[in-house]
Length: 320
Image 1 (cartoon, helix red, strand yellow):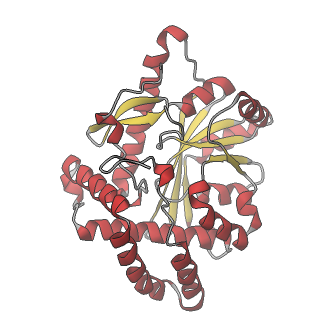
Image 2 (cartoon, helix red, strand yellow):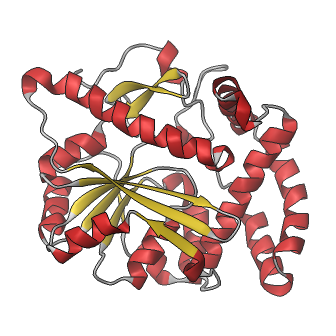
Image 3 (spheres, helix red, strand yellow):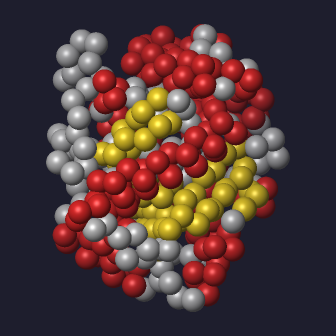
């Protein structure tokens, strides 16, 4: 348990503890549509924001950073801003349920940059896709299901969200089929993933959450005007798999949703004498693209913990 005033790791925060309320709201949506869903969502959000001080403070800190960094966006770190942030999170949870319940209009998903992935598939090449907690990762998995040639394995740490994942499984058992629980990257896991990539499959890993371990290996990069810790795992894994690396971002739009794929690196190599420098460069490249997309939809980045906390704590560099 974290000491008072000390930041907890994101995996210790049950970011979907109002899953029972979301189950009720999903039923409301199915019967009456999205407007009644939103009307009923507000009391659930009020309760959650009042009861979850850590997540509320994390949202406020993030919005304050956006407000200071890019005032022209009109983002305000007040209670209305926090409420809007959590409302976007609630909408994203509903979209996940709609996707796996077969009620989401996937024809309204705008794809950009898909030619990068299509070219790799045509060549029989697999790859690593670094995703984020911006928007809805489920869109990537569902689009992969609808395009059988694009086979995905998503690396996750979802023990903190078991109730919500059980609910997704009840909607569609396939929602769990391409998930691989990973707390630490063992040699055995790396071998399994290497085999998947060799067969032309894609491995998906998040690049914006510090690993679940006592002494996580991180690189530091500027994000929204402040230095923040970013995991080096995606780049270390890519160097082991020796495969192309792509980035994936998603966000809700007025007409539906947008999923963007970007080419990142064809091959990542980490020479021992340049390892730290290369990891810093890779993390900085990823952070710059994450920042760009977050500023397009600042309320849709759902990392409800103190993202910059380790910047003021002891140094835990990737070379340690």
